[in-house]
Length: 152
Image (tube, rainbow, N blue to C red; front, side, top):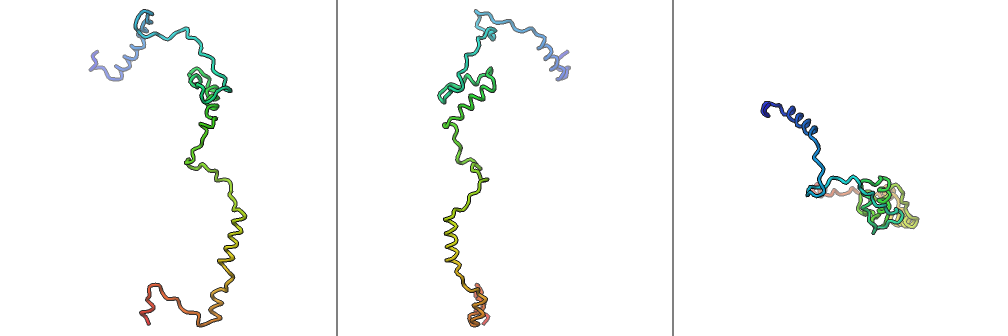
């Protein structure tokens, strides 16, 4: 069957089946220049340094290997990032402050506010009482645009 007569998906499926049925390539000989197959007698990884003895200058690469337990890797990273060199908060991070704590007004500031209130807002009689006592003091306020001057 030619490629033009065979539908695309049928051809794709046939090629996949053929690829699965092909024998595996022979292992490379030691004398050849071909890349070496994975070693079957891989030596065990070197023992890891005790997590308690790690410092920022320690080599953390062995803890990042694929054969290291996730708990061990996590403990090593926790030890690394607990160091003050890495444990610095960004001062510009949004919402960094704890706004749930109340910030009470200091007593000294309250005393100054009370003093300012007594100075600024003396016990003056209300405007209605002043107008009733002196009838001539009552006058209509002039409009801001000066229209009252032209009416007279």
